[in-house]
Length: 311
Image 1: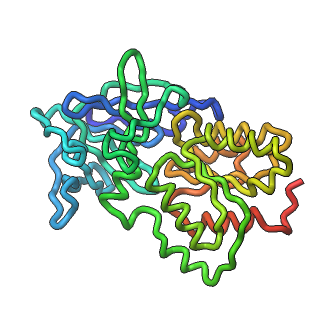
Image 2: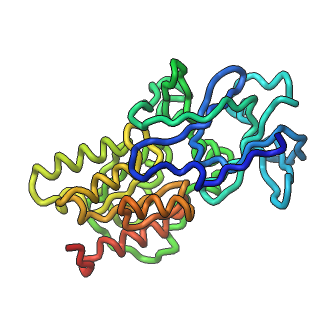
Image 3: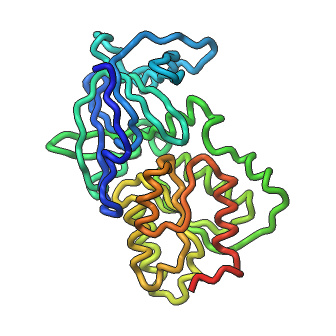
């Protein structure tokens, strides 16, 4: 296997079905998973050039073709035993947040299609509690698959690649706004960073939910209490989330005669040209890739402007 390439067109599911495809892989005999939408290619292990003064989990760099790719040793990062047979190991070449990164794993098992309903938030004791790196636990054919939070892994290894609170300063002086912003984000780290950034930008009234289902439940309750705009003025949603993903949440909102007027911004590491097609199909008002937090604030400004007629 010199390299198996995955195109986004190959793996895109019908929009808004609340499903994803997971690539199963193993490290030291344990089964883990990654959204196939993040995987560009799988390659056989090859020697890498070590990098001085790098994070201990960074194995080095290699250049399979025109790109120089950084390789992260997931076994070392997770504190699991190293491989006993390197020649059988695999590099998963991923692309998200506008970055191409290789992850050294021990084997690739296959690809499964799973509903987000069947993916549960991990218990608080798994992989470091609420700040851990397990974003979900999926059960498939009797196997428990730990879905890793690759965004958090990269943010910890290279903090400069994640959301930067200082980017809000580039927007200049800001006034306070109390319009309610509903956030659906399952990563505890990123959720905290988004809320802190919005508060710094003047948006002080934020409602945080851990997934699309919680966000939709909040919206359903808000509908029964009168004017929806007094409860929510804008929705910011990740795409990958247990129970209900951002595309399905967006579809439910835009299919609802009352909720459809609410602007929905998809803020995800998966945003690219192909994924934008899915977001457009379900009615997202805007789509932006993490970690562009200043651009997210600008979109909120534009979409919640009093002069914007959303009737």
